Amino acid sequence: MEIEHTLDQMISKVGNHIDVLTGKWVAQDAGIGAGVDSYFEYLVKGAILLQDKKLMAMFLEYNKAIRNYTRFNDWYLWVQMYKGTVSMPVFQSLEAYWPGLQSLIGDIDNAMRTFLNYYTVWKQFGGLPEFYNIPQGYTVEKREGYPLRPELIESAMYLYRATGDPTLLELGRDAVESIEKISKVECGFATIKDLRDHKLDNRMESFFLAETVKYLYLLFDPTNFIHNNGSTFDTVITPYGECILGAGGYIFNTEAHPIDPAALHCCQRLKEEQWEVEDLMREFYSLKRNRSKFQKKTMSSGPWEPPTRPGIRLSPENHDQARERKPATQKVPLLSCPSQPFTSKLALLGQVFLDAS
Image (cartoon, rainbow, N blue to C red):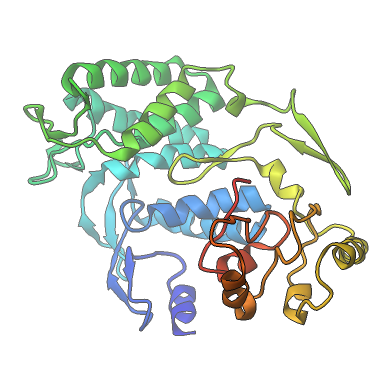
């Protein structure tokens, strides 16, 4: 594909907007912030979660270019992706995730130096403005707000787990005090419309509770299960052996939802042929014998769970007919995780999890 060709050609520096139809870059500013931040984050976290060397190799290649072209005195600027010349000498608050990401690859020294730069901005204003002009040392016009974003606190949590440096707890303390003092209102915590005078906006972003408060809590809660180092875990017995869960090493997605890497091993296709035969035999006695070949192909190698009634798995072709035959008041889960793979669930009515599992 032309998009893939373009990415291969520009693998060292990446813009932040691409036309997916033409494969052409429509925003050619290369940096680590808005428009490309989640991409870098998922390369690293995906590599760790999935043990995928290719993803990590891609990130490390990008990281070389980022260090060579965008880093200046432990700040990261925006440059023109083809020429490498500075296009925006600004720090965006969204970029504050970067020290935390660096800590995940073991680049602690660089992470701490960059974090301390960002922390000076926090101390200057009591929060991070959306844009900060690095040469001028001040906010950028129309980007003076602070919607209580979590990225700097997220980095503090990661780095504190890696270093134990009390400076990171000081940031957490400053964040709590600042948010309480300038943001708290009667019914919640309001977005700071302008950090220069601490005027408030009539809104509270969802990520404040979902991410900012969560990372603050984890920063100050060293015994939280999220920080488990493998010393404790849960053992779950499946038809195919023991499955270890809750042993630690959780990976957060970009919305601060933790994912247990050990859970992935419960769904691996180990002993695939043996499991498939066993599943087929179980299904033969529990489901109608006139299932389509399509249904047989969607068998999962994961732990088998008996369906609640015959016909629980339906192909897209006969689903509508079967639904018409069922009583209107009957509510039977169409699918039961992990009886079918993700792709099959997604294909059926556009839904993934129709039960509470």
